[in-house]
Image 1 (tube, helix red, strand yellow):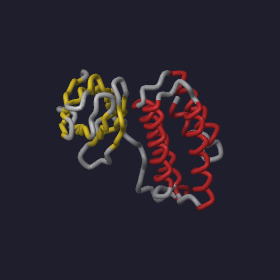
Image 2: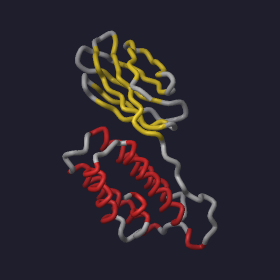
Image 3: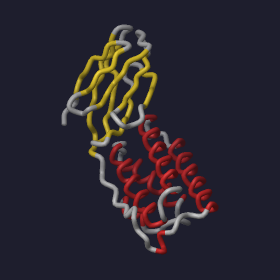
Image 4: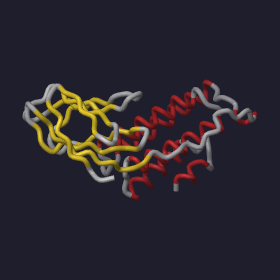
Length: 200
């Protein structure tokens, strides 16, 4: 799908058809505005933006890149570009396999620490844009939340699918993608040895 240019008046919301994405502009000024991206049934993402700034927002149909082209106190012009479809997740949520037992509290603590290591690596990597870093960190938070709900096998499948989807959605270069996956392998070597291979 091609990029869509849309004007949104200050203190108004507008739906970006046919994506179903809703953009709201609050507190617009000549140099900065507060932008809210949302989709029915999903959490909003709010950001202060200036001309040239980008925001990545993940909808059920895929990730969109939202950029400010022009702005003043009355109106903001956006360029909205779909960049990737959402990949399916191959988790067997109803598995009753004994090896699909829940994580212990100690293991949940290790997962949290490992995810923080990955976030620190992402934050230190100069080639990752702020919008890309935010998308990945949000996905890592989702993976942490899933570890408290899913069994081991289901969580590994969920994590592999979510990370693959995030790498595609964030449109990383091959170098950044490799660095990120190496960080994940290093941080989670204690938890799983084979799932990260699915991300190569």
